[in-house]
Length: 153
Image (cartoon, rainbow, N blue to C red; front, side, top):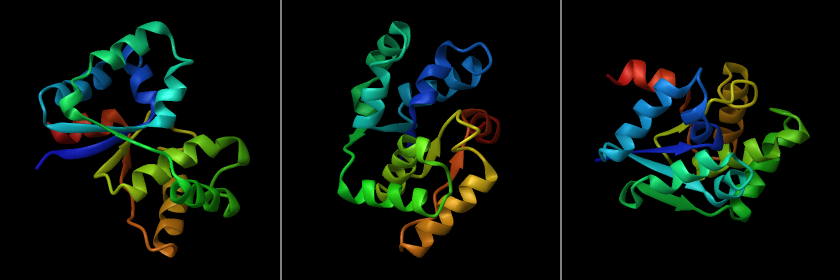
């Protein structure tokens, strides 16, 4: 069975970032080969509108067979709001919370991000997952592409 990884917008931007390019391209190679399904949301699409053109174009080249689009709905918004109420992150990080909630509610195998301040951060991860468990959702695995590549090969 293919693994389903939720990719936040930072992962797509990592393709053209010197610091993150190598690990990001290796991860996308797994998507292209069919080993991983890239789960993303309509929020990701709207964030990509503001991304550089080369990032938007790269997104369009990914094989649709290995892509899964999810829609931000009321349940996701409610869970994301709970993260803010419990002060896992500040109010300005609502979109990050939406990514976490979307991945949680859609029961992906892992959320992948290059956002170390608000997402791939041990204290934040503990906060998100404590809320998830209180609300009867899964505990979400959150990693950077570098961690997946290093441990996956």
